[in-house]
Length: 532
Image 1: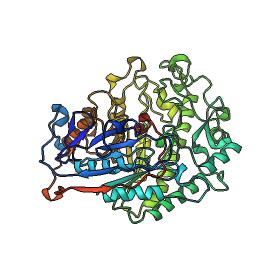
Image 2: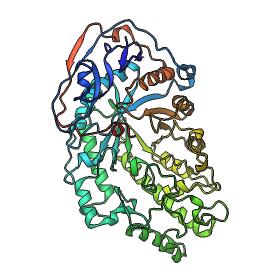
Image 3: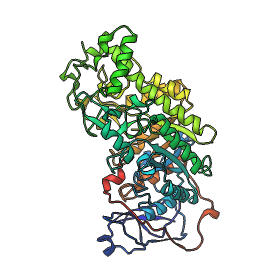
């Protein structure tokens, strides 16, 4: 059996056939003139809510093994046999009006992944969609429908509870939270220029009653309890894991970089009223009240090179001074305490289920080869040439019996500009070492499925280790199923654990089914579908 992708290339999925159905991006106004409506697994690009139908037909033909195009990708590694593979669903799999986007493509994609031997899929569940209009009023309908689709496909589901917003696609915080932020901007992270980051509530208000007389921790707790109640029949069976959003983009960090492709040092985010109050208390308690007036005055800004000001200079920089150690110790300890609160919350809610708890750390690898590691410092990780900043982080994960998600497993040093002194490989090795020391299991992710050639080999190299048990490939969409990409992904899956289908599991006669309508798809671009 085989799966065809648009064009003449074919991806043969563990001997499974989708009857030469084409996997790709479908523009309903243009591509329908080229491909018939019954011959594609497609992600619709639509400018308005519309109803359309697609039929998927599967049939069995002769099974053939994957023919590896690369001896490195195709070679089976016995050390990776225990690693479970997941694939991330589109970030906007559920629309802002709580309907399933790309339902036909997702349904067909789930079947393809199951036949390929993938363990399950990861689903982002957005606070701004579920609790959109009113505090305490939850609408899980779209996510429940999608979870049932995953269950029916025979796959596992890893849920990411997203208490942050997204830019691509645009998914803001709940409307009622944004209204509170308009009158009290101090609920947001703030830099020294008084600019707010409005896609995540500041960790400084975790335990302050700023959300209609409730604390954010209370609100997150009630959200998790509602999720647990609504998905109780799936927890521990279909739902195998739950990730807690710990900061911007779900990662345990400050929003120190405001531009995705910025290569500067970043900015410290300690200037909202409540962060300054915490800093003042910390300084006074240690007998240095003058240290509590604000962040470093001699640090470079977002896009400036680290050596443009004194704080991050390798030799003689303020980061090595008594004040520098004081500030960085406080700044990083506040971040770790925030992660501790949220992972502890998740453990208290889901501890009696069989679902495992996860949290994500960032891979701030720019300037790693300097002594000061400025990108990590502004993000909240006190990691320098003189200090291991990930030991305390790993210890916090261990204390909460949580697994650590580590992104960037497809990144290599050689594909980054030398002038940035970047080293993702060294940083991954350091985080893996700290996690192993504290007995924390790792779940890997890639940064982009459009990364440099050889990314799958790098992923396999980074998955090798006794404390790496799961890898989630980000993410399903148009490029994922393209002829340029999908055959390589299929080979990667086979090389990790070489699944074999029993003859009883193969379809023996034509099946034809209608896939549910999508009443309210949202506009999206190819780039949005691939955002990680």
